[in-house]
Amino acid sequence: MFLVLVMTGVLLMFYYVPSDAQAYQSMLDIQGSVTFGQLMRNMHRWSAQGMVIAVFLHMGRVFYTGSYKPPREFNWVIGVLLLVVTFLLSFTGYLLPWDQLALWAITVGTQIGGAAPIIGPKINMLLVGDYQIGQSSLIRFYTLHVIFLPLVAAFLMAVHFWRIRKDGGISGPL
Image (cartoon, rainbow, N blue to C red; front, side):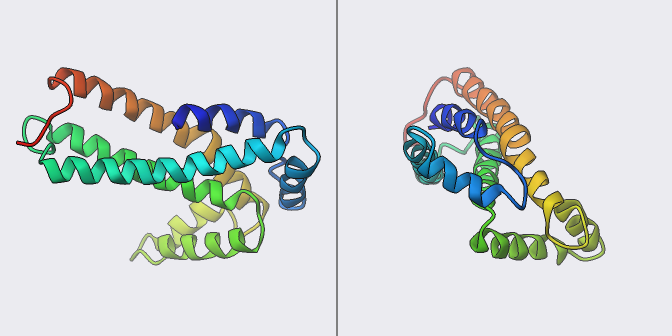
């Protein structure tokens, strides 16, 4: 699913405009005017939702079978980090249409980060990029979604797969 997301995401990047004035219209143009645009957007969205479900189910299987126990505890930590990165990718992608749902999601999401004691306002400013949600916020989440988080996910997946091989393959019930 990650590879499908990368391929469809690259194709969507050709037409998406990360501007607070044009983001929603560019998403509508992708769906209505671009050849196979609706298919690409739906493949991207459904693969993203499928990846969240698959990673969550995989974590449940690993926990249920006890595969997080020694000698695989480091790989469990990598897996938890991958789950967090998957959730962050899903959240940042949810914001990109820049519609009312996205506006309220980013409002709630940044207020959660801003509620941290002492460093909360700094975290909020780091996430939003300004004193109010706008163009700088969209660009920050777009950059996170298309550059930073996919690179982090790819690196963590490489380490995860390497550790599976190093630890003797996929474990069964202990």
